[in-house]
Amino acid sequence: MRILQPYFNIKFFGLVFLYGFLSYLCLTFAYELRFDFNVPDSYIENRNQIYVWFIFMQLAFLFALGQFETVLSQFRLPDLFRLFLALALQSLYCIFLWYIYNGQDVAPRSIIVTDLLLLFISIAGFRLFLRIYFGEGFFNWLSGRYSLKNVAIIGAGEVGSLVCSDILSKKNKLGIRPVLFFDDSEEKIGRLMHGIPIIDKISTLKNYIDRYVIEKVIIAFPSASAKKIRSVAQLAKSLNLEVDIVPALSDLVSGRATATQLRPVELEDLLGRKKVNLDQGSIKNLISKQRIMVTGAGGSIGKELVSQMLDYHPEQLLCLDQSEMAIFDLNFTVLNNSTDEGRISVKVLDITDEESLRHCFEIFKPTLIFHAAAHKHVNLMEDQPDEALRNNYFASVQLMRLSKEFLVDRFILISTDKAINPTSVMGVTKRMAELAMQKIQVDPENKTQFMAVRFGNVLGSSGSVITIFKEQIAQGGPVTVTDPEVTRFFMTISEAVSLVLESATKGTGGEIFVLDMGKAIKVLELARQLISLSGLKEGEDIDIEFTGLKPGEKLYEEVQHFDEVHMKTDHKQIFRFSAHGLIEDDLDRISSQLMTAMKSHDAKQIKETISRIIPEYNPYSID
Image (cartoon, rainbow, N blue to C red):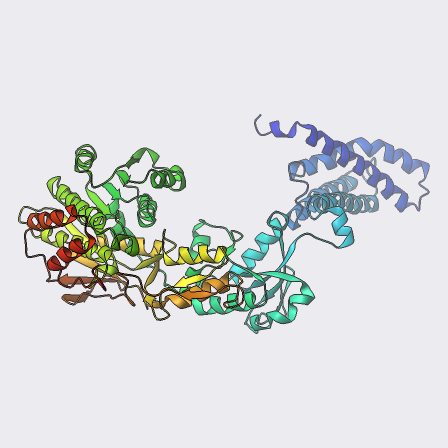
């Protein structure tokens, strides 16, 4: 009953009447054509006798092949085929009856065939009209004018074919229409794909813009090198065209994205970061059936950690952050979409509050902790070394001691490349947290495996240079760069977090893992690429200004501390450092010295105290 119920509505009965009426007209006209519009009386009588059962049979076959349940305005080749099949089967059945009854009370064979063609053309024409009327717009179609943007698809491979097909089925919704393919393969040029010509090589794009009124290009080879994507994007931008790119091939294959979920070309596409290969089995063993606590869960790294770990279905997940808005955003963007909602809890909590943190340990009983909470902005912390110490060092030591007390299995400290031979307060406080981690690890009473993971800047994180550049470009500039020679290491957030999870499976206690961040990139070049991606020209539309290095900033970042021995792991993008520079003094005595200095609220005195504890700490100026 539930299957038949949708048919009993106005649309269904309207189609029954329409198709029945068209069947009546076509059968009548078929007789007229057969006898040159002078039908003998005997055939008129024959026609009148077969009207009812003939029309009823055609409606039955149309119904059987789903012609009453389709979306009328969506009419493509599969629908055309099913319509023809329904009418052809009915005609074959009537011809069969003609032979069985020797033509008695059955229409002549020529009339059956003529009726088939007439009714097929009538219904197909009706459906095609509806598609034009509700799709492109009837009057636009008549005049040849459309409100759709003409796009060229760069890449005529499988992804390009998928994109084109998807756009053709949704072009009015998307507001775009593919008109050309470009591809560098000589074998493909000159052929058609989905009726769209593969016109020429990519470098000839300029020659076809005016002729085909191209307004946008879609880059449809997501697995190509960053150099290739960069060259296409720059070519299109130089021609004042909009540029979109399809999602990553892995997202298309896995179903996380569709071909028409286009997005602008981002800096990540141009950096050429290689795909991260993970030992999914080891990560699953690490995460599943664990009670996991994530500090700083509302930040860029913490949020991605939570998102990726949800795929491995931990037993329980506790997300901590001192920012109410960060927790709200985490709930809204990540946790609300999770099927493990009952296993996830969030808490607004400042990890410097020992009493509240201890209560969390007593209630939640974590077995695995990812410590991502930290003050990370170099410039801000230079004027507030006491706050950097409180959050980056003291809170970390407190968290590690609680982990040791409550017998947490594994503790992963998220560190930074700025901890290497630090010149900033932010960097040195993270270095102190690393050394404290190693100090606690070698405590004879310790049962927890402590480890740290270092990496550089992540693209798109809050307060990152890329985010700042984008905001400056949106405001019309200028884009500010500290020094024309300054370089930084960059990773995507997803890549960094994936490697953090992989690193966590390899530690046995006391290690500092460093992620392969590739080659250092000039920040000036990043600024220029972002300006170009925004469709602007440096010096004409927007300027770049140099402001000079600020206190605590380095001209370049380093990958290895001077007293660390670099060792490979079984993952080519992860390295292990064996460090000998442990804090020799007692942590409690060090904490006492730092607390005394912090009470003065004198930045100079606090930095001097830190430099006595960490001799390699060499800020540009202590003032």
